[in-house]
Amino acid sequence: MIVALMMGRAGSRGLKNKNLIKIKGKRLFEYPLIASIKSNIIDKIYVTTDCKVIKRVSKKYKAEIIHRPKYLCESKALGEKVYEHGYYEIKKRLGKRVKIEFVVLLMANSPTINTNIIRKGINFLRRNKKFDSAVSTSIYNMWSPLRARKLNKDGSLKPFVPFK
Picture: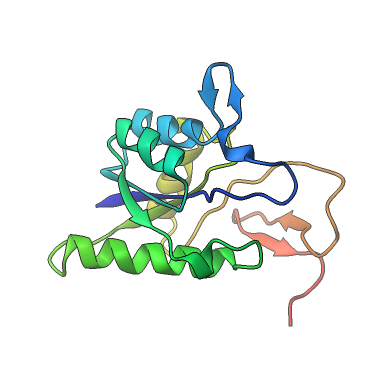
């Protein structure tokens, strides 16, 4: 089974209510949901949020809602912790008999995600068993060197600045 987990909270430090902003008639967070559905490769969509609007609208896309605890809704909460909470909730809901092949992690503020990117990532992982994850990237010359990566011939990303 392939599941998608979209993360999107109500608050935002930089741009107030950014996940709720409408672009071309859809709220920002709707685009990752639409891409998931249209990919025809994702079996179930989950949304972890504290936002009433995201909960209500996500249900229209047949997403199952995971209530995000308050401590994971603060600006200082780490994305990894939100993902971990969502993953364990999904595992609990699906039960031990259902094997999850992949979790497609979606961000509510990523309207440029599309079906092609989702399919490409999953197909890459199916062909390359030595990798445990795939990530979409973009060329953006304003990032810190700590976030910069180099694409290797095998399709992996190597940090320019080594992590410790």
